[in-house]
Length: 101
Image 1 (cartoon, one colour):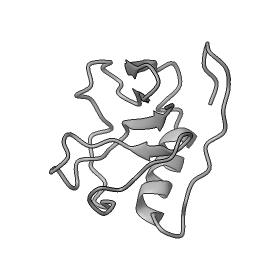
Image 2 (image 1 turned 45 degrees about the vertical axis):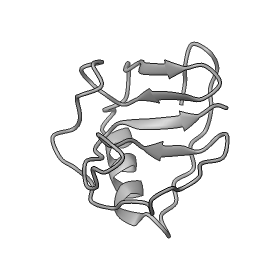
Image 3 (image 1 turned 135 degrees about the horizontal axis):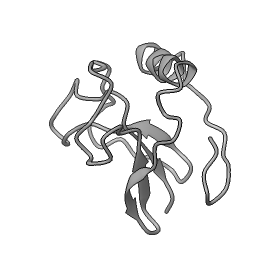
Image 4 (image 1 turned 180 degrees about the vertical axis):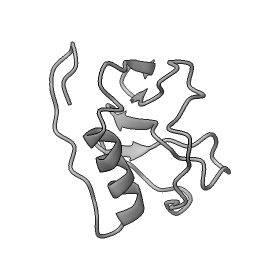
């Protein structure tokens, strides 16, 4: 992923999260993320992007149903799909977050 703050590579986990990984790959292939910024930036915690509206409420027009177990810990550098709330399974679409601290 190319950003104004530097580039990074995202590895997709197709074993544990096949639907989510394939959705992310599909959106990337279709250039869905091209030109989108990060609409949520919390220093030393997380950056979030993948929203075509930039409001935090947009998506690709569909949701991914795979949901990680509650209280999943994400180490620094993890990229994961965002959902609309802690108790909102099946609401991930195109938004993702990167753990920065």
